[in-house]
Amino acid sequence: MTYIQFLGAAGTVTGSKHLINTGGFQVLVDCGLFQGPKEWRERNWQALPIPAQEIDAVILTHAHLDHCGWIPRLVKSGFKGPIYATPPTIDLCGVILPDSGHLQEEDAAFANKHKTSRHDPALPLYTMQEAEDCLQYFKPLEVGAVQRLNPDFTFSFVRAAHIVGSAMAEVTVRAGNGQRRLLFTGDIGRVRDSEIAPGKVVHSGPQEGESADLLVMESTYGNRLHPTTDPRPELAKLVADTVKRGGSVVVPAFAVERTEKFLFLLKDMMESGEIPRVPVHTDSPMAIKAVEIFLKYKDEFSEQTKRLIDRFGSPLTWQNFFFDQKVEDSKKINASQYPMIIVSSSGMAAGGRVLHHLAQRLPDPKNTVIFIGFQAPGTRGAFIKAGARTVKIFGQEIPARAHVAAIEQFSDHADTPELLEWLRTFKKAPAVTYLVHGEPAASSQLRLAMTSALRWKVEIAQWLQKVEVR
Image (cartoon, rainbow, N blue to C red):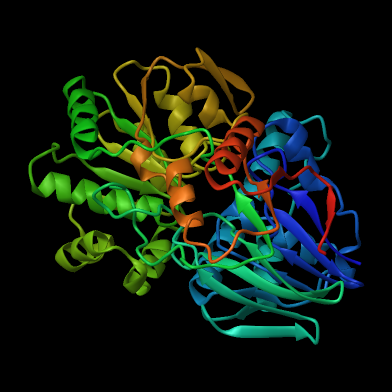
């Protein structure tokens, strides 16, 4: 029997892992970290229901931690097969995964020093070295190239338009008395052009005219609508008002692509006089490498983004823009009392150096925290965004008196109208669609929209559920 089992991102937004079993040959589509509520995060420490060494290959859709961040743990558990991804995704994983291991080592060391963990000693999920070791298993596959894994299993990548290098996985397997075509979307980027989706970076995709017998699709923004207005006036007012108060702006941002696009926008707005020229600090150990990868693949970007790159060149050369790699550099930021803009990961304030900046600047009403990405329920970022009066950072309750704002135009996820627009281009309706990578309310609302507008059969995937491919 050929089946799919949902090992993550079912009933929640994170931890994407979808197992395809074709009678003993087993392939994992994505291998991400769980983030958010403790009950999900604890599953990062649990073994998969099948031994890691029995998984034959991994197909990776893109380089966000909730899709790739469990790979070092999988390898540590005994996996030794190939990990297929696009060249940009491999380049990004070469930066993101070791950084993830480094941060987990730092968190474990902090917990041991300050006795903030119930585990003695606290251990990292994996180390920086273990993350670097897993990179040897990555195999590049260009978009559109067909890879045969065995006589009954082939796949190829198609554009997803989520982040640079992101792709959907088109899989063909033998099931029943014939072949079946499966489509795993990973995360789907904004569908419309930059005037309607002003935060859109990647231009190519998602690919239209698809055909699938079974569709596994994300539903992150199933119950949200993106603003269609230009984010610049709102951002200009937030920055100007904060500087006028003598405060600083803290922007939790994913280190890859979101940070780079935001930096280009800040530069453009400073040059045009829309915001005051204040120091901009990108506080991330991997920032320089991330910028270089971003510029290396600029052909994937929208015309608007290309124009900014052509006009301003590399952010590494800009005056008054600083990239802080060392801990000492990060500490100097917090020692300064002058207005500045601090862009730091992680984007959901789940970890990383942004926590030090939030711990220092959240209590002061002069400051502003701006979220420019999705905040998964249960994450620290979601609590701050929702208006929590205090938030726990490094084991202490920190008062949240700073101004808090969210600019939703920068999201890389298609919302319901955009998803429906893309789905209407399918050559035929899938026999069944399974919704993953969404909170229950988002998945339920998207299911209702799809069944009403398209008359498709749509189910919401459940964690550990097995579904037969007929």
